[in-house]
Image (cartoon, rainbow, N blue to C red; front, side, top):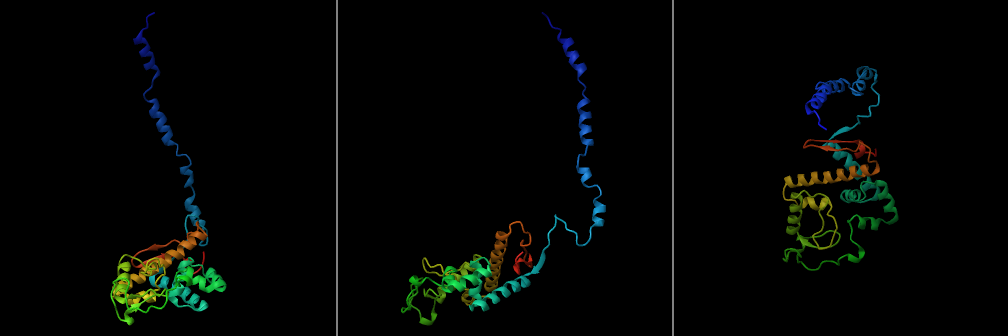
Length: 254
């Protein structure tokens, strides 16, 4: 049985309209769907909104300068230091340890103030407390130095002033703030800022250390706010060389 291929091809060509698809595409393009309706009446809505209207696409924030932020943080530190009768530098380490939970510090201080200082790496464990240092020997440089040139934290690990200066200088140059600790092996005691500042050789390093400390304090404070309420935008922090844009979480909880 023979098939006329020409006639079959012509039949198929008669059924196909090349403009059909273009017309369908144009019809689809002409249909804006819901997008056009979304913006209808927006201008009127904006005009009708009052100054106190809530906009879910915006959130409030307060711009604080570096000095204003630092002042707010120092105010809390000074208040805590007065309440539990410790130095300002120790109060800062306690706040960092508990992620700025002042109420937790006060509660734990009432229960066991000594253990709180141990947990915050301010005081050593009683079992690891080193006896009074009788030798004038520095365990880092292996040199014998005068007694007045030996320095130590509460752990009583004595090192010469020169080694302490190098230790702190290198870490500050690497961007370390709160994380500076004792040089003794397996000793995790943190160095309070009033111990470190006199060991830094120039004002430039002191200024860097001060900024690194401030950075660490703010990061801990804001991380605490994120843990308490992850959806809250008040704790967001943006930094630039001259301006810190921060929320009032630095002063009170959101």
